[in-house]
Length: 453
Ligand SMILES: Cc1ncc(COP(=O)(O)O)c(C=O)c1O
Image (cartoon, rainbow, N blue to C red):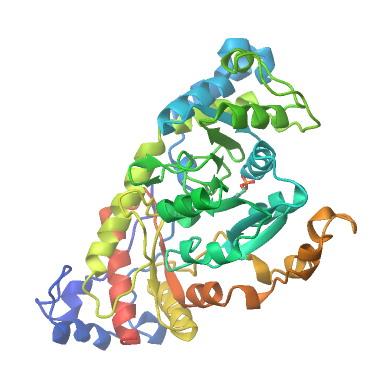
């Protein structure tokens, strides 16, 4: 249960005009009255006195389902998948997850990061290859490319905070092999133009859905649109077992390579049979196998996935609707609002100074607000700018192209600019109607007090 909210201020009432209502078509004259409200930051009364903020979603939904699944593994005294045969929880999760998404195969692994390494291996990315990725994403995306000896090439994000399809073609060289489409902060990438570019240049598309499990694009689940997809089940993701990951594909060859890579080059029943005995040979690989406890919790969490997504979408939609009439409002764009997870409502606040004031003022009003998070502007990260690797002879940066490529802020000015102006509120699937109203009230009050962009 959420903390009870004390001393709630009735925002609409305190404005003192009945014509300020949530919805469209509100006269600007009345909207401007919001600016007369003294911000809590300046000593005014806050919208709420207890700070409202989102919490990790999955654990809020843990109940007897996960408990029972876990108990079964404990009582079996066999937490290792290959020792459990057809009653493996990981196997059940893989089948249920693949069926849920509409993919032929899903493979459980230890994390989203190892899922990325596995997907790279499946796509046969290696020394001499280049992979295009967004300048704003998580370290794992860059590291997975470098750790297989390939060269990361950054492209800008657009106002969706995802890879800008218009910045991809300029980054393609004869060495480019893969476009990494990362669905960031719950927003699906604009996959149609990305797939079109990939087809035109004969490139593969890897979808990183770590921050978008349950998201859809034009009716299809993300992770099933490109050649291969990955997911993370770490704590801050849509569903979680604390850690965990998955690789999804409908291509049997990609699946076989992924499977072999995650388990020392081997195949196992029932996948050996599903893959017709296996067409590819073994190769040097890893152990990224998911354990049965993780599989058990994820089986339970999968039953909650759509409830969590519905809650997030509902709350984000209500906030968006309640602020839609604000003058000059620029919300984060989404190529598919229906499929967007709605993990946050983000505004373009015009300048970094105005954004920073917005964040401070929102917190003072009792609503936690933040700059877009969960990712890093990677080209500006010191170790990336230095092209630091685990060994001086690492192949990624040995070629003439690898030596010539420059990272740093110069390679993503638009990404830096878009993110420096953006601020917003993260949603929680269990926010109450009152919570959602408070978020909208706080945004309205602060936005109007800051004045028009
Ligand atoms: C976009 C993205 N990809 C991959 C990962 C890696 O996932 P994990 O933390 O499960 O290794 C993350 C983690 O936050 C992520 O945000």
